[in-house]
Image (cartoon, rainbow, N blue to C red):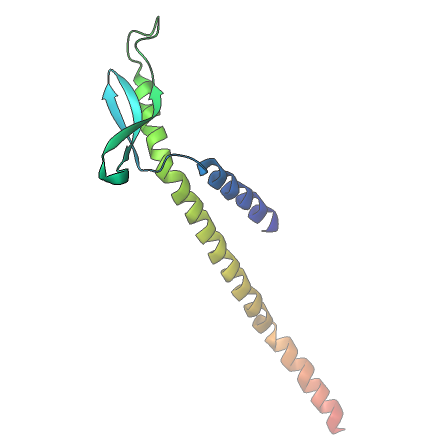
Length: 130
């Protein structure tokens, strides 16, 4: 368990570090010949769209037709902005639940050996009575 916790801690830390300085979400996809990943920014009450990523570009030479993966790539990038922090939160919550369950299991293990402790105590008490 210890090695798995270190590995998931590293994974969660890497996910959180990847989010540092990233444009706030949620992100969405806009199609205008190509596929743009954008963020709606409503700072100061003004709705402005901020381009995050361009998936495909029909303006480039030899790329005058859209490729099927362009839209899927854009959807993936847009979804990742919300999925990465949600998955990191979920992993942390599951790690805490697992640690609590392991602590309970350890205390139950003591009770599982209660019969042996009872037998030892009875033998000690018999020895004191003689």
